[in-house]
Length: 70
Image (cartoon, rainbow, N blue to C red; front, side, top):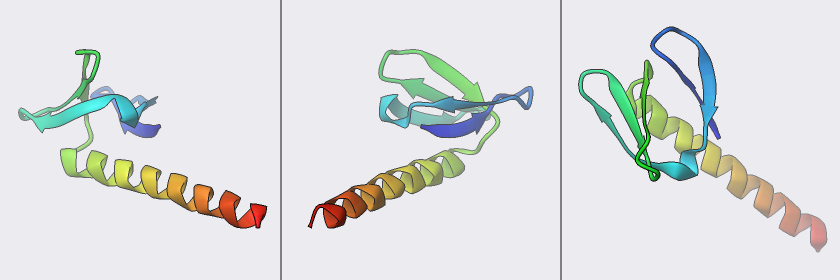
């Protein structure tokens, strides 16, 4: 999950595995695979970077667990 910010400044977490696409119109709109749309204050590039960081952390943890088993 990644942290994003609503237009009113409140932060919340969103499941990045459910993100279908992100667009700026000019507000940033996240469309989920469910069809739900969420408008956020973050820029699209920021959201993409957060997703990359999240997935990298998961891979690091997976590698850690695999090394621990050896």
